[in-house]
Length: 467
Image (cartoon, rainbow, N blue to C red; front, top):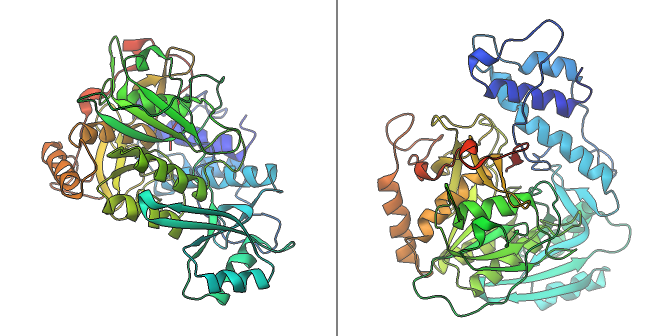
């Protein structure tokens, strides 16, 4: 018997992802189903809470959710099923906020934010003086010249919620940019520590260089041994190796036996933005990580994480694009009916969706006018910190295949060359769905030959969850 809303929703989504022949249901409840690989905290914005204690409206009982979302036996996916991934994220948001009420709260749209922090984008000294007079304290200053961002972090007066603090600063300085320190999708399951931090060194002649914003990577994995990996931790807890980052890194640059990433042997610069604490993956951490990767001159940067729009993060993305870097991002797994997620939906970002082994769009993948490419995102394997391989599923794992393809076409950050690299890859894309560019597949499928079947590398265990 299904005992929780999360289990019920996951089971319904897993059932719909199977072929029609596998969707038969017995009279005693749902059969055991394989994991579908959805993110653990990649969550949508529920309605704003009425009280300061983070709460969201209750969802329907598990049994009714299953009845409403399981598709007809003929195999067609019902319209209500499209909302399942977003509902899963909503439930996980409730769990995240309940687990960490001292350090997390919600913005006015229900998205998780770090408590006691407001981000300001290049405020004037007069604006800062006015903020200090009302009890705000400047706790961080960062001039991130590599992306053209001046970031100020303010601590609000005691007893002021993040929503109240942002509102007050915006009233004090209507011309300024004041933003929440939003959290972006949790990268997934934890793993035993491993790998090294490394230090920047002269670039190998002719080597492909790629930036990665994710978790820490198991640099000693056999699939990553032929390349060079430089890692740096930006979140509380320091560099922490996890399955998600290791899997994405292998799809970018891995090589071992039957397994090949998109750019085997490439130099990877890994920014761990999650560490080991609940505030990992915040907007301020992401912006610092992107600035470091710009300093390292990584022409292509892969970001397999998602979250709400944030004006400070948007400024960082614009700064990267203006300097000729290509940011490649997963569109997320909130389903086709969900609104766009960020940073994939920002102009200039290469947004990537995922397809299964038969070229069908993943049921949980986002859609929209911002989608640029599709790449394999299921029925495939990637490296696991244990030293072996594991099945993976999600748009998180499609993005690095596109990033690797672009990195082989872009040697240095350069706006004109970046545009040519994207245009060139578009010409090679296999058209899927309606003729021409569309909201589901963008320009079409690329890197189809980089999908390694789990059986080819003896992949084991449940699928690593992707964003």
